[in-house]
Length: 403
Image (cartoon, rainbow, N blue to C red):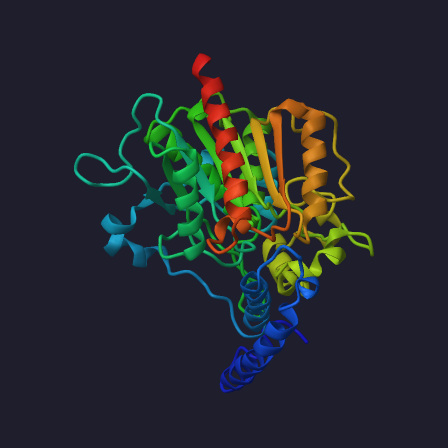
C-alpha cells in the first residue's frame, strides 16, 4: 500500500477509527504476552516500556497511512515569543559554497530567513537571545523527525525531555538554542524543502550564534538527535570542509541516535536492521520511501548511498582519507536495541580513522531503542546515557580553557 493512502476524508476518519479500535484490541494481547520477560523485545524491559514501544510503532504506522503532523508556520510563533524564546534568524546566502551550492541548484533550494527557540537564562529585561557573556557555553541543537516532522518549540515533549536532561547533566549555566529548520515534503503533499534546505538553515543559525549573539565557536557544541543528528553532522562537515576564517568549527559535536544512512545500505539477516526490529519503533519510516524521497528531492537514487553529505554511515560510501580531519571532538550516542545501530558503528569507525580514537567518544547503551534520550519514560537507559554525555561535555569545555 502506498503511503498516505487514507489521507482524504471520509476514508481518513474510517481508517483511523478502525485502526484505533484494532490497537485497543491488541493492547490486552501484548500485555498478556509481555507478562513473561522472555517474550518482551528485551528481557530487561518493563511491561510498560514494551507496550509504549509497540504503541509508538502502531501510531507511526497510522500517521504514514494518513498525514504528517506538520509544525506550525513560524509566523504563528511570534505572538508568544516572550514565553517560548522564539527569535528570527537571518538567511546567510553568502556562506553557501561548493558542493552544497551545487546541490541547492539541483533541488532549487535557496537561503531563507529561519528561526529558533532559546532555552535557559534570559537577559536583564527578560528577553531571550541576549548577547553571550565571556566564556558562556551553548548547545546548538537540531531536533529529530526524519526531516519531515518535529519542532523545536517548547511544546514538544521530546524536546522538553531532552533539554531537561541537558540542563541536569551538562550544568545549569548553559544555554540551548534549538533551530526550527525547514521540513521536507514530497508527493502526495507537493515537493518542498529537499536537501540542503535544512543545512542552509543550520548554517544561518550558526552564523547568528557566532556573529550576532557573540558565542565563541569553541564554547559551542553542535548537537542533534535522529535526523537532527544527521543535520548536525553535516554542519560540522561543512565548517570543516570550507574553513571560513570568521566562522570556525565548534568545540564539540554531539550526535544522539543520528540518522546517517537513509539509503538503508546495512541490510541482511545479520544486520541490526533485522535483528533489532522487535525492539525499535521506526519501521514505518523505513517501510516506505516517503521520508527519503522528500529529503533527497531531485538527487538521483543511485547517487544517494555514495553521498557523504546524505549518507555518511552508508556501506557503499567510498570515503576519502582525511575527509573528516577537521571535525571537532565528537560524541556518538546510540542504543544497542536500535535498527540503525550498524550505520552509527560505521560512522564511529570512519571518524576515528580521521581524527583519532581519543577524539571520538562512543556511547552504546544496552537495551536502549532509537532516540531514547528524548524519552522521559526510557529509564534507566536515558539517565545512563545522559550521565556519560555530561562527563564528555565537561571534558570538552574544560579542555578548551587553555585555548
